[in-house]
Length: 85
Image 1: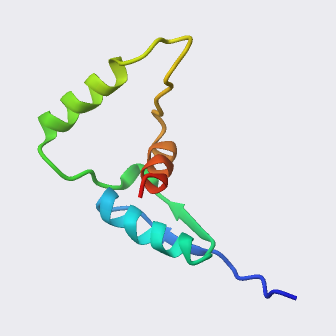
Image 2: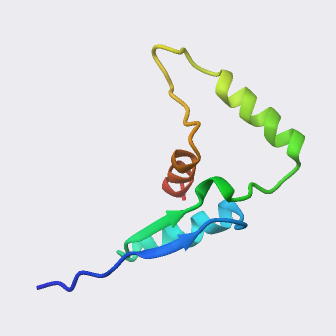
């Protein structure tokens, strides 16, 4: 029987989103179970105004009824970032 491992808990507060996502993605590919807490407190690096402009432009694309549907919750944004790694 396979031994059940307890999940690794990662605290996202104060961590840069992309660096944390790449670290978590590597561990997930190795088969580890990971739980991320405080996703809303992670940091997105870069110039503030350019990131806000990018987000607004990204959210304006699409049809409200047909999609593509964009995530607004911090945990879903983090999940999509990790999925893209």
